[in-house]
Length: 112
Image (cartoon, rainbow, N blue to C red; front, side, top):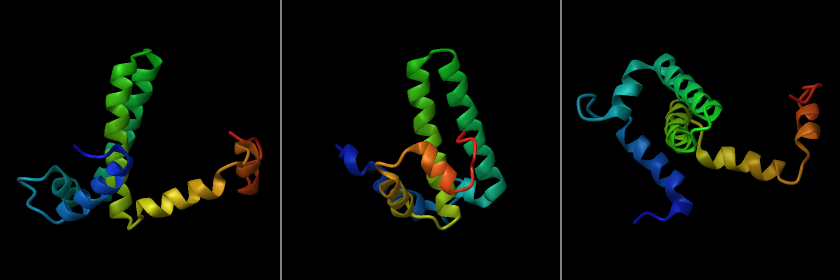
């Protein structure tokens, strides 16, 4: 059984290991073979499907779509050479900051 605390790191490693695999046997390899445009399309599709599930108050579907979205975001990060650790570092830096103040620091004046 996989420890839930490190599943994202394990998934990141699996994605990296399959990145250049056989497109006939690996969904990950197939996505990378189609390029960033397709990868970003999949991220968008999964985000929309999550929003639809949430708007329908479908908790179970929202959980499934959230998992799909996280997976596809990890694929996109891999394509962009962004490591999970880098994103986690940003979240750690933001810990304890007001979201409104953090957005203002980036020039987002309305905070949304």
